[in-house]
Image (tube, rainbow, N blue to C red; front, side):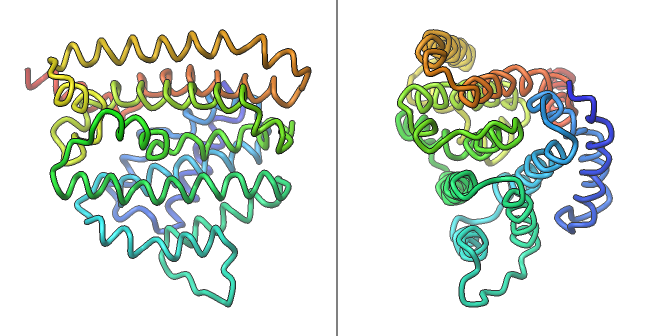
Length: 303
């Protein structure tokens, strides 16, 4: 756990309130109780205060955007029409493009703060995967709108984008202070272990958030339902299959460690440790945060 966690949790909540991204006092209180600073405190425990603030603010931006755009009744076309402002921010606001959306304004602030700590390659990497994340939200919204449970193949492919994990993984080497070179970032073993870590975190999230999402319009965008519908199995069997899938991905990560260690790169070592912190830290956080535990308690009470 980061020694800066309590301070950062308070500062990020103040930043979030000032941003205008939360719609009312009830939502503010819900975010206060969720204590999102404890997520980044567990997943980036090595980061100095300013960098921990940066990654925490970005994680909270993702949660706020998810609540406002991705777990709401917004239609796919409405989300698609909002994309130009976000893309303009990520691509540089050429030609004096004006941004008035409050989420896009805060995205610009975060991008500028990342730029202050990152080189051009690191910033471009984060911008690229963030654009993929934003576009993937249109696909999710279309599934909700048309009441479609995506195929297993489509879901596994798109979940690596809808989960936003590549956007937070792209900040690991910045937060750790050990820059991955472009060649290291593109190395087959680095790409493979990143993909496995991505799968583990999002599949864990599908299991942990199922109680929260199962009664909502976004339930179709959850691997438990995808496997149950298209695999023709029970909900319990689907969960057990996910457990086996994530354990196989963990095994793949372990088996790639010797190849990565042979590179002799301190940056690669720090990046792999950052992926491991994300896997353990996200589970630890989810099992203690009111964002997820309130739904579990409600489900238990109903049953």
